[in-house]
Length: 274
Image (cartoon, rainbow, N blue to C red; front, side, top):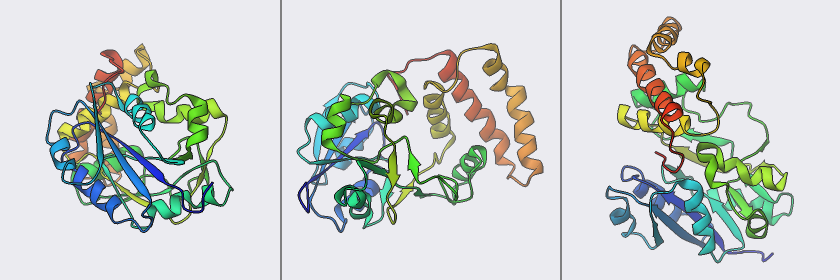
């Protein structure tokens, strides 16, 4: 591998007009300059593509089929030796790519992830409720004592990605772990790589993000999950959060979130996502 190989940044986009400019602006200001940015428009119906056209990026269109399909398609158009699998609803520290690929260049890892994933909109009440419901510390997307290996890749040598023949597109929400399963390898934490993830900042986003989770392979359509995500149980858990000091908004959040997961589980269509 060359000392400074080309890095192909693959970004699936579906209705991310609120975040895409922040994402692309942060990538355009990276200290590691040898990158190409490939944006796969997964059938967006908002202004995401028009905003992205203001940046020097490659835009590929497809019908709405999901993130895994979009990433696989993006890799087909990539020219880099390293693939960076990033998200449109995130922004990145200026040294993110440099730090993310360092273990790969040092030959200490086939692929990496970053456990310093912070919340970009921590002051939003619905973002805060998302963190509370996820059991995460304020302002963080991952626990403080998170392991140094993971089953999700943020960067991976292209040759290894090609061995897997790509993401399992049928897995939906959990498809990002399918590379690890196929390779029987885990990614390694890239020390110093810092990213900022936008939590859902409106009840509309909360519902559709939760529905995408429900459409993954985490929950099954059975009586247990029927009761688990029922309104009565949502209120019960919301009150428990209140008693532990959560804001009153958590009650409405919990009802909307659980309704989204419930809809995803019992009215599933794994081809669509947030």
